Image (cartoon, rainbow, N blue to C red):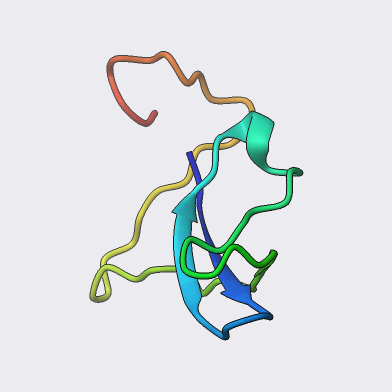
Length: 68
């Protein structure tokens, strides 16, 4: 489940919100003022120089053995 960053045009506050797949295209409301939130571009998190392996579409999501 992705966490998106949002900015409120009404009050200027910024929020990180967990958005379910079915909710991604629905407008999000500001918890502070109720205004409509706009999705911002997010930076990727880094793990202090540690590489994080990425799954490709051809790799199984249900594998209990991890990455192959």
